[in-house]
Image (cartoon, rainbow, N blue to C red; front, side, top):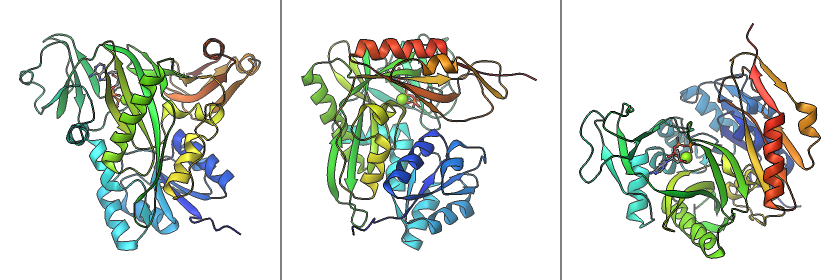
Length: 385
Ligand SMILES: Nc1ncnc2c1ncn2[C@@H]1O[C@H](COP(=O)(O)OP(=O)(O)OP(=O)(O)O)[C@@H](O)[C@H]1O
Ligand SMILES: [Mg+2]
């Protein structure tokens, strides 16, 4: 009988990415233990075992390491220093490495590593004091990004003029790219858990991400993305170069801008399964979650073939905040090839990711039409008492 090399996978973070990792782990015959501070986190209820402790709690992290054969992440905001030390003290394998996470978590360091490796990206400069003048060579409009701590567009501000509201904290300034389309490539890099050596690299074809311009948050993901084969190949090559530069094991999402002049530029990396890869559960031969587990365990990677055109929409909570309620459930489920993923989060808050829906179709147009209809029919909101 074949040996399953790792029996228990520890996951730092209990959000929806962790939940979907737990589902994939169960099918592969792996056990899961999840760490999160909120006992109501989606993944804690789906894991085989749970540890309720803050992601920076030393005792919690140390328990996670001692109860796991291999530890991975669904979120980068954790004590990577403590995890590095636990790895060297106890010999537990942590994939991707806490060091790789540290390089990515700071957007300035991430840009510097990409630069050193000649990966194309927007022009940028450090901006430590956001009350100061713009760095030399930059003018309005431009984009300010906090170096750390931002997510779902919250650490990003477009500065259209000197009076635009600025974020406070150490930042970078970037040229504002004239974006034709935002793409994402999920790269899987299988690495030997013993030596870290690359065993296999495989990329999903790029998907298109549509954004709510006001919120800077991704609302819809579509595959195939509709660019030329040459652009697809170039995006995949750039994404693989970026992931290799950081030595990331597991799946890593690479967000790219396709600029109006045809250039491809890396926006940012997320060293874990990502919102842009959710549609892989139904649309691809292997989901990003299963692929992540295969990659960190050093197992053969699965096929990344796109089986059907697909469109995914995030279900965002609507006001008011409060215990979660939904309308349109039956009507949503009557849409052909609509797949609901409900994260079971409460309370509902405006803009909170409550679930997602992936719709398949014979064509991209049909998949998008179904996803738009699903979004229209199904609504989630909090109920005030
Ligand atoms: N240099 C840029 N030029 C033009 N638009 C930009 C630039 N940088 C960011 N944006 C816009 O802002 C969005 C959010 O930026 P970014 O991905 O860096 O932030 P984030 O908070 O880490 O996002 P998320 O967590 O949603 O991935 C981008 O997807 C893009 O729409
Ligand atoms: Mg982003």
